[in-house]
Every structure is written in C-alpha cells, then in structure tokens.
Image 1 (tube, helix red, strand yellow):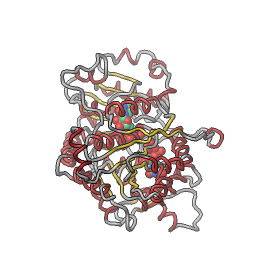
Image 2 (spheres, rainbow, N blue to C red):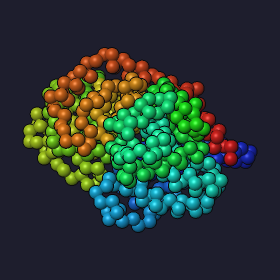
Image 3 (cartoon, rainbow, N blue to C red):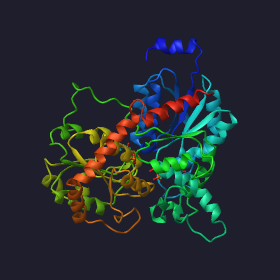
Image 4 (cartoon, rainbow, N blue to C red):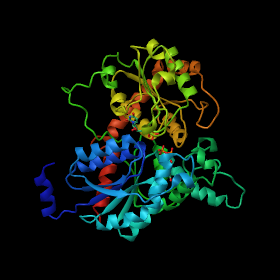
Length: 479
Ligand code: UDP
Ligand code: UDP
C-alpha cells in the first residue's frame, strides 16, 4: 500500500480504526498474534499498535518481536514494563509461561493508561485469552471494543466458555476438579482430555481459566485460528448460542499464515539449515518431529523416540527441546541421545535444538508426515500444508486439539500414548511401527490433502476465513 492511499484514506475522513494488540507470552501465543498483526499492517485502512511486554521469557520471543517491528515499521510499539512479582516465593516450581500470564494479569491495571493515552485514539483492543478477565473490563470502561484472539481451537473455546456454567450446575457437589464436560451442541470431553491442572480447582491455571471463562461473554468478538471446514460443529455451536446463550461473534480466520514472507527463489537457504537439508531429500520421504516451543520431553522418552525413528528406516528432521525455556537448554545432543546415534543416522536424519521455520518445513515437498504434540498452531500449519499429523499430546489443550485432528481429517491420534506427568514410556518399537504405518497410509494422506485444499479455499478471496476477517474489520470500523 502506498503512503498516498493511506493519506487519502485520512483526508476523505473514512473511518480508520486503530487496533491495539495486547498479547501474552509463549511463542504459541505470540506467533498467531504476529500473523494477525501482519495481515492488518499490510492494509492501508487500519492503524496497528502492539503492547510489548518486557522482559520476555524466551530468546525466541525476543528475536521474533524484534523481527516483527523491523518487518513492519508502520506498526507502533508500546512497551509495558511488568511490575515486580516474586513468583518463585508464591508459586514455587510453576511453569514460567503460566507465571508470566499471572505477572501480566497483576500488571493489567497499567494497561488502562496505555490504552487511553495511545494516539490516534484506540478503537479496539485485541488481547490474549489468558488476560481476558482483566482486559475486557478495562476496555469496557474506556468505551473501547475488546476482542480476543483465541490461540487454540474453537472446541477449546467452547470448553472455556462452558466450564463455568458446568461448575455452577454442579455447585454443592464435592468435587476436586472439573470432571467430564458435556458441551451442549458439541461433544462430551472426558476429564482425561482436559489440561491436567483442571483436575484440581485450586491450581493457578484453573483459577485463571475459570475467571477468563466467566468474562469472555462480555468480549466484543473472538478471532479464532481455525476455519469452518475444520471445526464446523464447534463453530456452529458457539455461533448459535448453544454452548452459552448470547456468545459474542466468532470470526474463524485461519489457518493464519506466516508473517515473514517466504525467501525469494533466488535467495538460497544457508547451507546446513533444515530447509537446505530438506531440499536434498526425495519427495514425501521425511518424518518431521517437533513438540512445540515449550514442551520438554524426558531424557528417557527422547531416547525411545530416537530408537523409534532409527527403527522406522525413514529419513527424519527432529527439533528437540530438553527444557521449557530455550535460554536454559544447554544439553549436548550426544549426551541426550547417547553415543553413536547421530553417527548411525548420519545422512538420513537431522536433529537440531535451534529454532526452525516450522511453517516452511511443513510446506516443503520432502516432508511426508508430522509427529507432533498437537499444539494448536502446529495442527493448523499441518492442515494448511496438507501434511498428515501423528498426534502425541503432552499436556494443556493438546488432547482437545487431537480430537479435532481426528474429526477434521488432519491425521491420527495415539490416544493411549503417555501424557506429561504419567510415569510411563512409549517404546521406540511402538513409535517406529506407528511412524511406518502413517507414512504408508494412503487414506490418511488423501484426507489430509483434502483438508489442505479446504484450508486454501477458506483464506482465498471470498472464502469463509477471508470473509470473517472482512467482517471483523467492518466491526472495528463501527466505532
Ligand atoms: N515453532 C517454530 N519453530 C520451532 C518451534 C516452534 O516455528 O523451532 C512454531 C510452530 O510452528 C508453531 C509455534 O511455534 O507456530 C508453536 O505453537 P504450538 O501451538 O504448535 O505449540 P506450543 O509451543 O504452544 O506448545
Ligand atoms: N487457556 C484458556 N484460558 C485461560 C488460560 C489458557 O483458554 O485462562 C487456553 C490456552 O489458550 C491454551 C490452553 O488453555 O489453549 C492450554 O494452555 P497451556 O497451559 O497448554 O498453554 P499453551 O499451550 O497455550 O501455551
């Protein structure tokens, strides 16, 4: 878009909304924000600002934030310095990202002056679900629309919305956790599929989840990284008010696309990079293995995965993480995987602890399947690329997401494979067998290719997600 056009827009007095994004922490939350921010920042009829919470938890967050502002100079940066929060005293041993959400919630009152003071006047705030119960009331008081960019699936959004109603119905019954949840209009979610902390009503995560769940009906709308063909039932149940009566509008705008443009064809990938390595491999021959940006897998389980990949006989690209926060990950691959493994698989396997451009990996023609924890971004990226996903949920929303992997035709789910906190290893033999099975399953491959086509249609001009984004922009122009 040219500067002239944008000046014209202002001179002719057309409503030009200013959207202030307030993301939380963790790449699984930041990346979808960056993708929506990029989609709006390339339009000339919207102003965009982003609250940058400092300090960041991980190196990946710091790098990607810097990259965002460099790529989109029009996007304004509003820094928020968190108030001191001695989390280790209050919540010893808790997940650092969950603690960051809590720290942000406790600093949320600082957001009022940021929103009120921003120039031009803020017309809408788009925040993360983890901050909903704090940010919605602040925005309401200032007369600013408040939308939530929900970074998980519509099924998870239904769960979040319904859990408070479900608990109120059960009030009085002695209960330790949330129990099985029968979401009206959708499906029954057994307790064993829920994020593990929900089994204890006193957990910090559970308290945040319930507070946010109670407040979300007051949001002005939800942007969800999904599409109608992937979750038709959940989206209909939310939109028809079956889950919770009078639920705000749900804009299904996925699958969100990378905010960084693909390298130009004449720009070569650096030698030794995962993508350069994939360039050397035959079509659909590589098993891609990754469990997201913050899932540490135990050393014993990592060794079983290694054995399974070796036994499968297939080529593989494995992104391995041994800690929750990347800055803490100092382990040597040879120590983790045992002497000899990297030697034995040399040429047919690549293992890395670095950040890889997963979206580019999944779109690479050499990749034949994806062994994944089924973090929601990973699921949508696999769906968009039409790559079959073998879901091995580890925690949080992964099992709920895995139900969508199956119902949406993105791949298969090993329901009995272990879940974080369970003292049980999945053997290398079983992993190797399952990988072989999925790699040679033409039916699964065909279904995933079909959902990939649906994904492309959804975001193309006139598609369901394209239209949802237009509707959202229409809504923020109403102020
Ligand atoms: N990701 C990536 N490279 C990495 C690790 C992660 O590009 O080395 C991206 C991945 O593509 C996805 C996000 O980080 O977009 C992780 O989100 P997801 O919901 O899959 O899992 P989480 O990390 O939140 O558990
Ligand atoms: N979540 C939510 N409400 C909250 C907090 C989290 O709906 O108050 C969702 C969050 O978006 C994620 C899921 O609960 O989809 C599980 O969170 P987890 O701890 O696994 O973190 P994440 O994978 O999102 O980084």
